[in-house]
Length: 64
Image 1: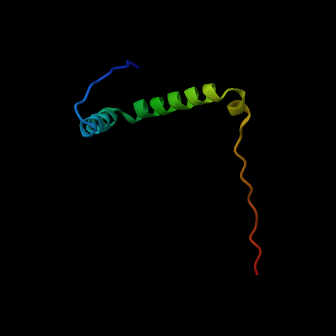
Image 2: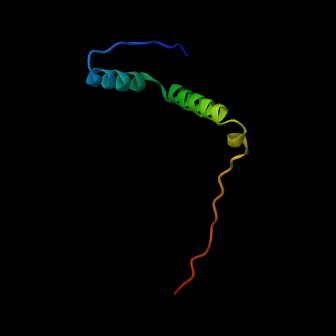
Image 3: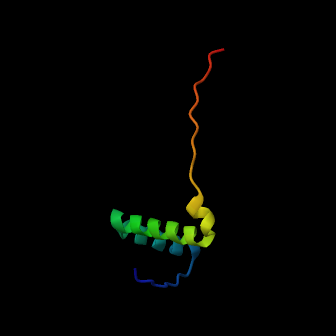
């Protein structure tokens, strides 16, 4: 992905520019950005992220 820097006069103009940019992307391009962010996060955390797993415990609710 090509990196481009833009300069805006106001914070509102910058926010509008961000929204317009992401709205112009295809769903596949947005997914690629998400996967890149996840990859960079996992690399920054290191070995901990590789071993981390989500565990969900399902239990039955007892009737009172």
